[in-house]
Image (cartoon, rainbow, N blue to C red; front, side, top):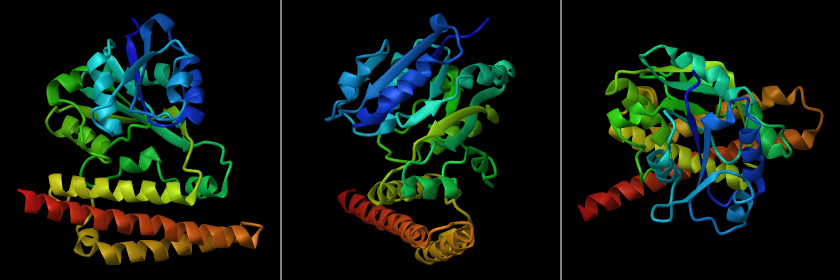
Length: 302
């Protein structure tokens, strides 16, 4: 018998893409009576609500806390399914996403299934750059030396996992998906499985500013994880000197782009990819600096 699944999607000012996401969810090859689609808006000021209300989905509003994890938590609290599936408003799911995932839950000790995240068809050079770097490739997350982890663009959990270990970190801006994955494995004693046949397509950032802000947020989340897990998110070598680390990262990215540029036809594209590598690295550095400032401020207020 097919279990009831609740799909939870946070949304914030993504009116241009949330409709495409919902259409793909409604087109899933899964019994409609066993499917609940929950869209949690996080106080959008664009036309998101109007777009969402055009579809037969459950709409919730999270206004108290700004952040995707707070939105997901509200969705979890209101979900009726015994399985909870997560994706994002800038994603499109494969038609067989859920029916492929269900078989992995036959094992009692499996608490979560993480599927592959592929880049959508790039429409800008910024998107093409991110597809080249494979920044959200889920399979890489299962090679982490501490514990495998999943990103919420494509992950599915049994609802009883939340009964055992609680919700996502409500106030985190990034890294909450990694934290939840680790808590499930460490404290919930349940396995996280990688499933290459459970596919979601992610639309990458379309502008250098979007790439910069994403990189800034990601490294801030990495710092939160390192603080909570005694520097286990990154290797010891990375932790020795983060500023040197990201300078090295920039050089490595330049080397990769230069190598890749051999296959590119236009010189302008090569130069632009080098520029985006720098934007990406500057975002990392800014996120690191911001985290240190916030940490110092919290110490002063304590």
